[in-house]
Length: 293
Ligand SMILES: Nc1ncnc2c1ncn2[C@@H]1O[C@H](COP(=O)(O)OP(=O)(O)OP(=O)(O)O)[C@@H](O)[C@H]1O
Image (cartoon, rainbow, N blue to C red; front, side, top):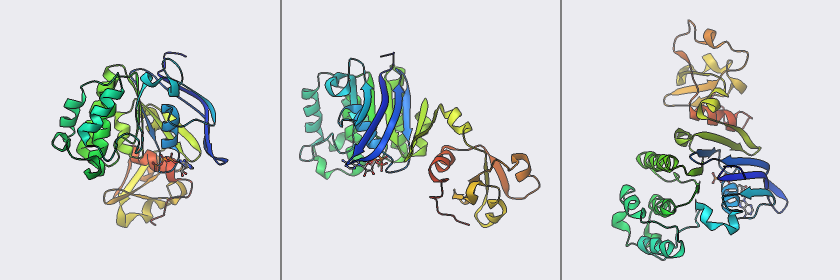
């Protein structure tokens, strides 16, 4: 294995003969936050489980420092869907459980539960928690484990905007300590914390690169107000327009000249793509999105 803290090669997973993904290659380096971004149901959680050793891949290999994930528990701290906390225990009892179970568990949780604002609920049973509180407890537990690699499946799901930013801050701290992080998400704003973005659709991984590379992999965007949609629909790919905040946006066709599209036309602007545009480009421009004009 190279210096990578995670190296997956030729990875595939099928259920009853139906492939969720196949021939998938992925690495994570020390000090790197990799954001696996994609729409619902494309296999991100199944992939995270295969990488963490919770699910056996149907084909291919996964290496973490010291060996393969299933038999090298000290290499990875993970947050998988609905897998970490026991409902009938309190938050504090869940934390104690992992403290006793895992020799790499640290007392970092004490600060994390305060940072996440769940310190007052630690003596409540987890089945009384909201979805967001539960996610915060799971995060506090998984981030308290000392490991070279963190695999976090949708750590920001169910969290409010302020808390999403806080999670990004915590992941940046892991990066500063030379840890490798792989997180999955369907929220384009999670791309903000990425050193590298890996975009996954039903077809598999369809794009990968630094944030700048991913943004430059999609065409420029044209935007206008809702009532003016007809003005730009001919210039955008598949004539597909996506709603923004009081505006509609589309990705310019290869034939459209960005400098000419808005020239002399009132209320039409050409802008650089945002992560939401990147998401729309890779997710919806195969005819799945609902047209709004
Ligand atoms: N144990 C299983 N048996 C059969 N099919 C499964 C199993 N687990 C997952 N799948 C299927 O694998 C596909 C991918 O699911 P997965 O949960 O990995 O998607 P996801 O990208 O994480 O979606 P989301 O963002 O909604 O969480 C889905 O079609 C799902 O039904």
